[in-house]
Length: 162
Picture (cartoon, rainbow, N blue to C red):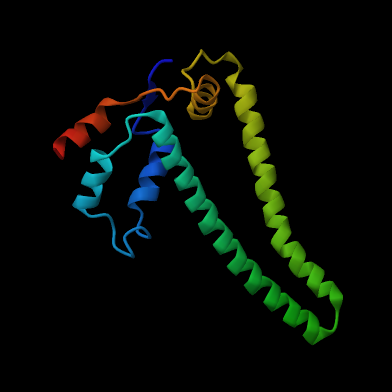
């Protein structure tokens, strides 16, 4: 299996960088030079470690999203239930439920539309190298972790810190 090539512009590299250098990681402070140095110095050399760092970033996003949705839902339902109780009309409760669910449905429609446009536009695309998910599937099937090869910009940045 060939080495997995990673660009500094790839979304999964940016996700890993965000999860390691975000303000929440440093308790409110932005990443210092030392944090950035440690990030580039200890980049994983095999795909399995890179995959674990990617999953950590996904879990961090899911946690923050669940927390935000929970807080917004709690505030929204508290507001609309109090209005419903005040007016003594259950219709206002369903209006509040609609106000919360209609934007989510709209976002799902936009995601479907973007997915459809990308699928129809990409029919004449040339063959590309395996992506993150395909590489993970192949490494799982073959019981082998390929090496990770970073692009020149990441190599240049990491060499400046040694």
